[in-house]
Amino acid sequence: MSKCFSFTATKNQCLKSSFTSRGLRSTFTDLKDGTVMHCWVPKSRKPIRPDVVLIHGFGANSMWQWSETVRILSKHFNVYVPDLVFFGDSYTTRSERTESFQAQCVKRVMEANSVTKMSVVGLSYGGFVAYNMAAQFRDYVEKVVICCAGVCLEEKDLKEGLFAVSSVEDAANILLPQTAEQMRELMGYTFVKAPAKVLPSCLLTDFIDEMFTQYVDEKKELLLAIAKDRKLSDLPKITQPTLIVWGDQDKIFPLELGYRLKSFITPTGQLGENAEMVVIKNAGHAFFYEKPKHFHKPLKSFLLGTTKCPKNAEDQT
Image (cartoon, rainbow, N blue to C red; front, side):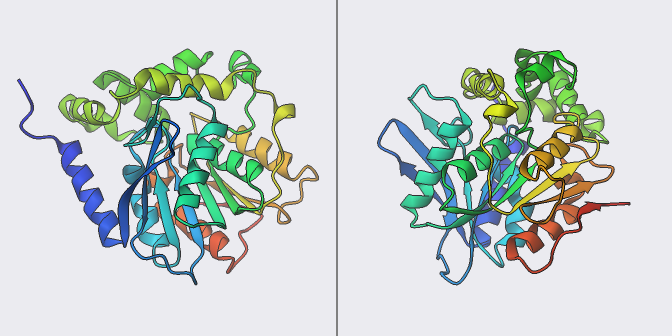
């Protein structure tokens, strides 16, 4: 028996209306190589405004992850919100699964929209893509924001116990839930106070049906590609001004990886030249939901260049 009502589908429609009301429109770009990219772009790009690209992570689609950020940044920036390959309405027939390929696809979408200089904001998996864009396209990416993305992880970290899981396969089972109980487990890892405890299973199942049933195998391959043979010594350094944002109780990518990234970008330990770091207290991997004001204030300031973030801005509330 088919469902007569889907809360998640209804929420999607509301988010589409919200993006439209913020001056964005839905577009599709055929990259002519078997790849089609969906992206929210400005209805009317304002040349006097900076361009910023918001790159989502695993989980709900880009609208669910960036709706509040779009509301805040669209007043000051030309905002672009792509769906990465195998998320939302983007897909490819090609075999590539690396964040390097994802970065190239996003860059080509920006070129198709006549964007030649941009700041990139990457959340979790999107942070891997944002970092790779900054490394590959130094002349195009002006500023970088890495949000709770374990860019500096090494394959050995899994075996040595840094994460709650010991293999990428186990991580995939958590990040790509197929049952209500698995969804509760994921939210337990993502939030400090998991809202799933009070949510009925029917709503969680509805969310899974809408968000987690397409391209499951391909998404697992994306996760495998992140960790495979990954060594810090192979990671290219980026030179753009960088803001690192982390929740202090992140269970997906532990805070240690944020400090590792900070040290990697600024090996002398002196913040301010290339990188600044904001640690949000009492927040997990989903700090953008849990503490949105504490995320958006330093984000906006960094992107606009109006004020300097504290050297280690920790929310004490």
